[in-house]
Amino acid sequence: MLWGSRFKDKLNKSALKFSSSLSFDINLFKEDVLVSKVHAEMLAKVKIISSEEAEKIIYGLDLIEKHFNDGSWKPEDGNYEDIHSAIETKLFELIGNTAGMLHTGRSRNDQIATDLRLWVKKSSKELINALHHLQNVFLDLAGQHINTLIPGYTHLQRAQPVSYAFHLLAYVEMFERDKRRLNFVHDVADVSPLGSGALAGSTFPLDRKFMAENLGFTEITANAMDAVSDRDFVLDFLHCCVTGMMHLSRLAEEIIIWSSAEWNFIKLSDKFTTGSSLMPQKKNPDITELIRGKTGRVFGNYISLATVLKGLPLSYNRDLQEDKEPLFDSVETYYNSLLLTGHTIRTMEINTEKYKEELKGDFSLATDLADWLVMQGIPFREAHHIVGNVVKYCEVQNTKFDRLNLDEMKKINPIFDASAIEILDIKNVLNRKQTFGSPNPELVKREIKKWKQTLI
Ligand code: ARG
Image (tube, rainbow, N blue to C red; front, top):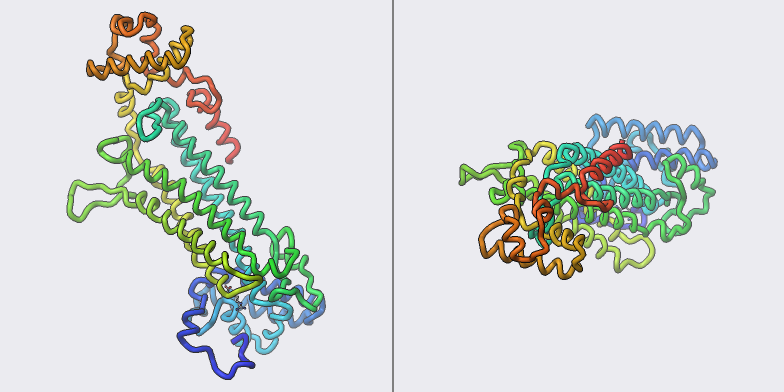
């Protein structure tokens, strides 16, 4: 017990169970031990404890780490309020009363804020690596599909043809923005609150810079009250998870649609699909559906912490303990979703012939035909109207663009000539694109190369 002398009674059992965070802040074990070691070193450096005492504390903490890692000590087995009390109690058992010197000039309030910032820094980098890996999976596939034509959609209606590589590169862009957001979170978390005490600093000459440097922080916080009550960096991290999962969920939705018999654009690997207990023919995209489904709870986690924070007066309040479960859950869910998205994409088969057939003479070439008319000197609005009539004609005649002959075209509008018929040949559609950021195969090739060079 870290406190208790002013209390007559022990904490009620169900109150302890209700308030204990050990089942989840055990995730912070490594960070907590490291923070304690650096704190002990600093106490010796500024001569608040002797170097022998610091060495004894660090020896004890090393032992705790060893016992924890080899499984011979399980903090969950005790009745502890949190990971800090579990470790400190164990330290007393191992090295006796010297353990009592460790907490000099420190509060669990600055300790937990420091642990959490270290964890957020580490995890944001892990997610950035996972995104980087996923981008490479997408680029490998895109490289094989620079000329694979697929319909591009708006409103989920066929709009204009694009290449499959171009579609995949759209996600590479999203993942890059996700990485940028995570880098931002890494940087806002990279400030050490250690040495802030409970809320008002310390009467000891604690060397905060020394601790920050040894823990790998770039800066130290400037206001102890803000330092112990700030969880903005956690909320920012949860927001990264929200946007990142939203991207994966949109992709999941596309994968699910593409794999249905109606679209038949991809075939998912058996390894990442499941069957039905009732219908023998079924192959369900469960993993992808779960990525879409789990996005819901990641959204919920953001709201959950935002709601905890909104009513808190300065500075530390126990409510802040509620920051951890949403954080750990979102990060784990996002990380696993990134991995499984990569596996799904890597192992699926693309039905390359499907859309080549589908797009032959498809009305999604209508804009190209209107652009052709503009090149003949017709104002775009009028061109739009003329092509609308061509589409209407085809619908009435139950035919498609590529089956129209010049006579029919001329009947709709005499301006059409043989070169207009060529426009309706799907083969040339992407090569005609001229703007940067379009699916012109040359540009897409260049983009893939650029990504490959920057992503190494
Ligand atoms: N378990 C607490 C948390 O996660 C640690 C800090 C407790 N501080 C306190 N004064 N009760 O926020």
